[in-house]
Image 1 (cartoon, rainbow, N blue to C red):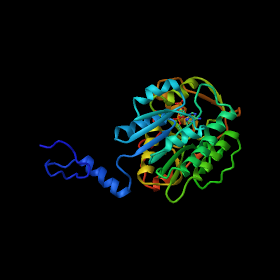
Image 2: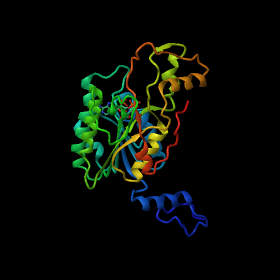
Image 3: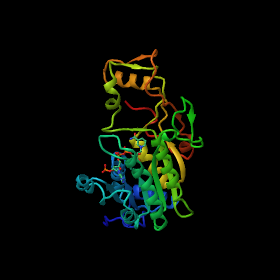
Image 4: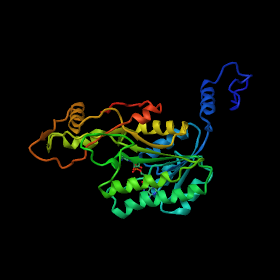
Length: 315
Ligand SMILES: NC(=O)c1ccc[n+]([C@@H]2O[C@H](COP(=O)([O-])OP(=O)(O)OC[C@H]3O[C@@H](n4cnc5c(N)ncnc54)[C@H](OP(=O)(O)O)[C@@H]3O)[C@@H](O)[C@H]2O)c1
């Protein structure tokens, strides 16, 4: 009995049964023109990037992941095929990262306990994307780029719905930087290189639970009515959507938020109830510290065929 699998022949003549996983992979490959096993670079293996690296590594891809932290290289090297210590403001490192890659995912954000200063913020997003555009023009092997951005580019919409066609005129500097970085990376798109920008809601998931974000509010009184809409997305869906975009070779801008569309008052209430915490009181006689409120549409991604894994806010 021959136990080896001929990757080109799912109907192995020696073995009597079909390897259904391999067969479905091959069919998917033929339908979507992607190689089964790709070389994939993930620039920024933080919360999302590391989970994505695990997902692709387990499925046999050759994943190169990056970190800016010397201390993290050894632990990252345990989960990716190749770990690289680098920053996006180093053009030589960016150029070298792209060599021989088929797909690139950009998942960078300034890390650290303190909020990044303006210069760091600009370097992380704008310098990195400028370097990527130049390096991509010299690296035709990369046919798919997926860039993670944020729904915060839409700014405050006073609770109204927004989709990808909404006019964007960022009012604060950070949103302006994020938007400029999106516009920069989109310039890399051409007939051979597809660029997809995914605008994410607030990210939550394992080890980044909503109770950690909202639990501290339990039992307190907060100024305002609590009627702002905040959009969330579970990390599983970020991985699911990125894989969907890659396999279907999509390009352009897509929002990625869940379906829950709840006000902050309702979100906090659910978290407090679920964890048996004292409720939060809202003082509508006072003005809220935070004004930003918007409902982000996820219809474009759904219309392309993506089904959310966690359509409702998980507490
Ligand atoms: N957090 C949210 O709620 C949220 C919401 C919307 C969109 N996003 C976007 O979603 C993506 C993933 O977020 P996340 O929470 O997974 O981020 P994260 O955990 O903070 O990870 C960010 C990664 O970027 C790396 N990095 C930092 N500065 C860099 C630079 N100058 N050049 C190259 N790499 C750099 C970090 O390196 P180290 O490994 O050294 O830390 C880390 O690996 C980011 O693009 C973020 O902007 C986040």
